[in-house]
Image 1 (cartoon, rainbow, N blue to C red):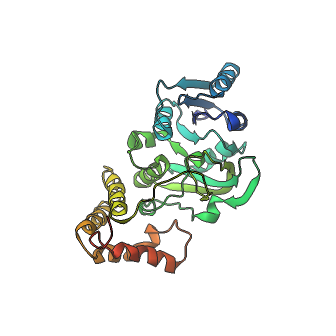
Image 2 (cartoon, rainbow, N blue to C red):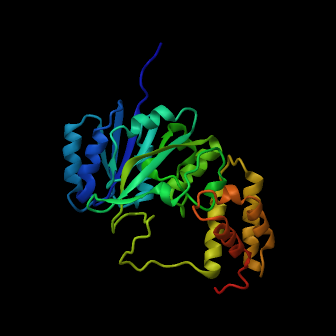
Image 3 (cartoon, one colour):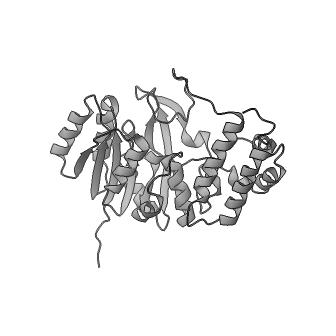
Length: 311
């Protein structure tokens, strides 16, 4: 009987992460599960990140570092890191969080026949102090085999995910215009199912330079707001990405949703779109924590076509 433990790869992406990186890497090295392969790709850091990574690579034989010749951006950098992984299972790792020591062990034990498994995370501030909130307090955490919940929302954070290597054959390259973790969740639900562990296995750091801002913390940056016709166009582009996946479970439904979204561009009212969303709102809007009235209001806003909205 072959009792060999499967190799798990941890894909770490870094960019000017010196401030928090050591604490994160120590928590990854301290994982109770083995065998582990730690693959780090640095995206042209200009601070002390590179020197720190070299120290870890010299000290730990399962720690490999790759350096980009040009800045790819964090989504494409994760794509590269994943492609360099050799494990039967792959986990994604940001540069500024803190992992529980049993994170990988618990996920591997629970993944079963699911394509992907994820968990809850606790928010901390830049000093590592708790913000007394978690992702599950903001979003409903979906588990199941339907891709519909990911068409408008996402509850699967990259840093919380462990997935089977098979998933990479279908989700890479990551499509432009969509967060990689949302795309991976969508693809995983189409190929099989997603499971969830109701435990906070990562301290998820929120700070000024975070790539995501799930807590909507005020930042001193001028971020453009998409409104009017441009917002409709953006929604259509997202749905086009989803509908382009070749192994869609709900192909007819998603293509109909896209068709009705496109019709908004040349209409005053989009009644068919609203009716379709109402009929499927329990799955479509499952991830949203808002009540039924707020969800219905979200749907009703889709009734207005581009001919009524300002450009």
